Image 1 (cartoon, helix red, strand yellow):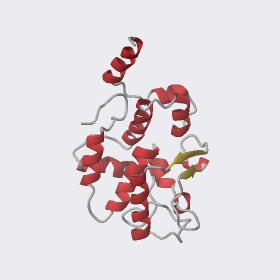
Image 2: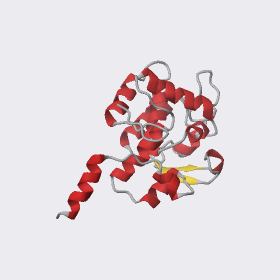
Image 3: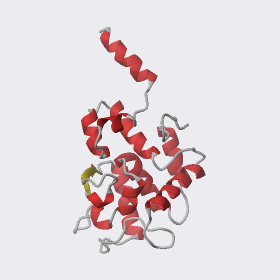
Image 4: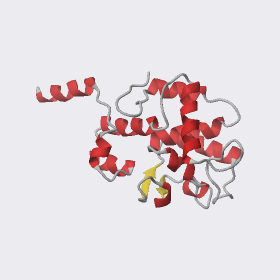
Length: 194
């Protein structure tokens, strides 16, 4: 069950797994990669829509672990790097690229719409929301991003690193993404009793 706190709901691992299993049909590979990039890279819909094949595949056809988001791709117009290190996300991307796209189309959008054109930020948002809806989960295109930030904080990643990964100009904006967890709060107090 998605946990609502603030603007976009946090997605539990069970709900994410359910979402991924529910993705079927002609664009299943593309949609799985979109969801992985949202959840494991914290990308906004605008950033997902702007990605090019050359951003994720090098000139030898290898998956890039470091994805450089050009200023034109990002909300704040600031260049940043994200890291594609999750093996499942890498495999899904490889499967998608080699089955449905071509590494020789480097300047082409990574994700093409059903009609074969580029996604706009709005159409990407709608598609992601519909993917959740089809899985029976009430969430938004920003839920993956919130989940990414929350998972990082739960892994004790410092807030300044999270701020950079999220591309926020302000720590306050980054703090708004965290979903408080009573179990973590209790564990924090237990540390004092040792």
